[in-house]
Length: 182
Image 1: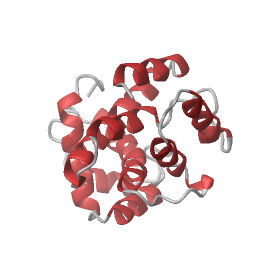
Image 2: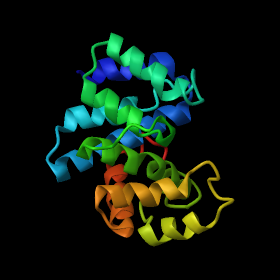
Image 3: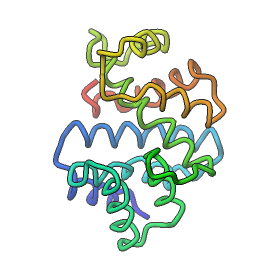
Image 4: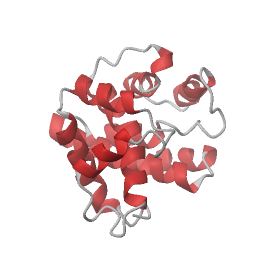
């Protein structure tokens, strides 16, 4: 697996700038967790990069992520990558039984919420703290499409306290803030 090939696949199926930025955010969070948990940062990063590559074309379950998994299989992507991607959609009922699968589920919705929080702040990600993200989590009207229960469940499955998880993801996104428009 090669990041440039994965990025080409992402861009082939995903035209939306915001969805591409989401993919880059999840990639960065996954690379950081790979470093922390002893995973392969390239494999974990590519898994994060491609987790929603099919979403624009197939936005509803079961098409997403099932059709994407088939495309990835045809492209020669490894079983563990495809299984982690399938597991990030709770409706798929695919067990998240590897650290990579747990990290992907834990980072996906949280990256969306962190991005939304940063977008409404004057200094974007630069001074965003976990406490601000947790406060926005309570506001159901804010970033309404983000599933708060999945964020809490993801941190628990990963075995990381929620505040620590949020802080970790914010820190992972800061080096690529400019690429994310943050």
